[in-house]
Image 1 (cartoon, rainbow, N blue to C red):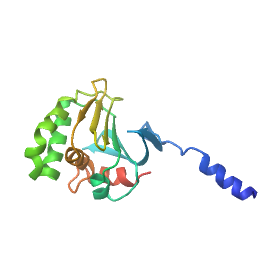
Image 2 (cartoon, rainbow, N blue to C red):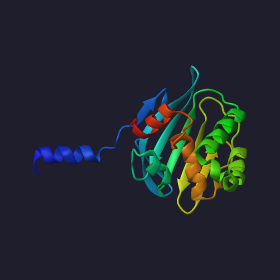
Image 3 (cartoon, rainbow, N blue to C red):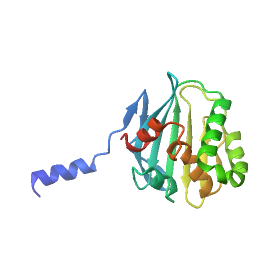
Image 4 (cartoon, one colour):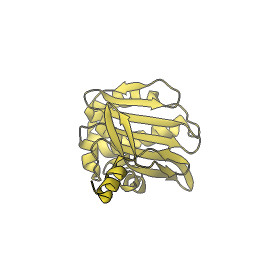
Length: 183
């Protein structure tokens, strides 16, 4: 084999470097739901002039198309790394608003599961995280800081939840763009 071909093979064999933002490190690839997921991007959520959290978005089959990322029936994950203390009420309010903006007509079918999800969210401290992993056929597995892991059933619920960040009316347009294209 020629030296250049060997060098190329060697480079492909190396793990992709992790990405760092605001002191938060996200791996280029992770395993979840029995699949390898690829980091699409890391977005900074700001409220006024406060840095609130970094959201890292992973997909099994990468795409920069938000609608496709939300609607696809593949393993996907959002990791929210808190940069400051955040009261549960603020998180609940933001998620509830995101659901209503993006999934308003479906709210009667989603509300009980949204309530289940919101009950699992505690007050969070800087350095803690929320991990939401959608696994086809299983549902959305949610782990918030040190609280118990829960699973919320339904692809429709997962679509509504991921739409909070990636839907037509996301919580933050800049955050959405960074989560999809900031690799």
